[in-house]
Length: 197
Length: 203
Image (cartoon, rainbow over all chains, first blue to last red; front, top):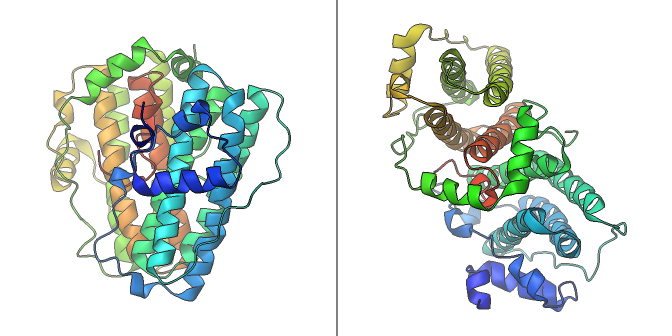
């Protein structure tokens, strides 16, 4: 299958190649296939979105969550080779989503005249010894993202930007539910999604 | 077997069950384009009251599904859990509406009021037409999707930090509900359960 088919969205493809260039991916077929689940086509802004309304403080907030999204991409890329079967497929699907989030945040920051923070060459991760530990790491990563987006949303000024962040937050909540299912935990333990879930 | 066991087993199973899910995905949606019920609202209290109204419809839908006797025990358990969540959302929104000094609107009661509220939301299908578990699940998924869109719009319009935080937490929870209900409907099909990286509230 062609690379273009695996990562159909240009922006996600660029994000993947940039991260691969940073030494994280190594270009294995496993990692390429990990991006097959990206479906950014439905990433639509709320009507009336205006990049000019984005403030410098908004760009700082977006860059803070972008840093965590980069770390999440790293965690998925590092963890997927240790997974198998359906669990691996789910993680691959979610990696595609995280790459789409990176692309969306980067394009939003650029559109507002800011400079998106780049991915680092590595991130501190405990050394997982198997699938269970990978799922622990990924669940923690998703919880961290949820915490970050919940903190970011009230700080963002243009409403359309909050709506974008809320759409990503909700997706992280979905990821966490599925990861919990795969771990044999309760997938929706509370009526309110918080980082303490 | 608990709901958790069932859904986890389904997720791990994948394969053939996922194929069945694809066929279901081709079914026509039961909802028209979601209305922008919040378009005419002004102020945080009006936006929250509008969300409260939609949440109450969701409560009625879950109650209705449970009352039919069409759900298997494991699905019943999941639906009952989510009904509890929806009631918690109603309570939280009511508290926030009252805190802003607005009057908490009365809850609709009875089948006629339920159907009227659904029509207001431009929901085409009547719950009375739902004949089996799968149809009920699909109906609930559509409503969860609809409400996610309402929350997304509300979050774009709210101004105070507290309502923004609570609505973001609830929107993410509704998205989780939709994911787990889709997993119950199409076991093992993660692409169905979490179809996109952005929850926009559209099927």
